[in-house]
Length: 125
Image 1 (cartoon, rainbow, N blue to C red):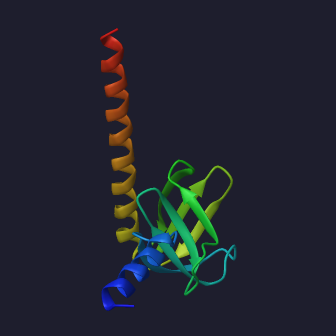
Image 2 (image 1 turned 90 degrees about the vertical axis):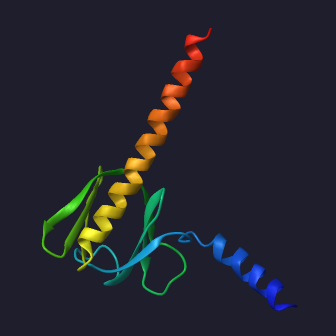
Image 3 (image 1 turned 120 degrees about the vertical axis):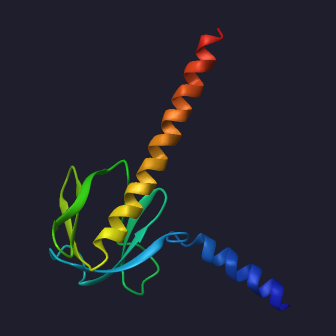
């Protein structure tokens, strides 16, 4: 197998990983729900919780399920869903929150654009 073929095969395998394209942040579980050392994988469609060094997520939260997120205390990130509040310790709270906010804003803009497009098509009937 050539070097180029090997790289293509490697990239195809990497793209299959659920965390592909996500930004990984080292966090610690603060509430005992998960193992202590984790990765928070912040992506365009969701946030994944991974045991640090593991390939498969413990949980994936789509942004539609996340009701709120923020920092109730310095170095503490809270992600709230209808069912529970997840607490993580990290020095990267601001970076995580900014990235999540950016992705959620993009989702909202896409939906507004889609709704406007559908509305405009309806006006032509």
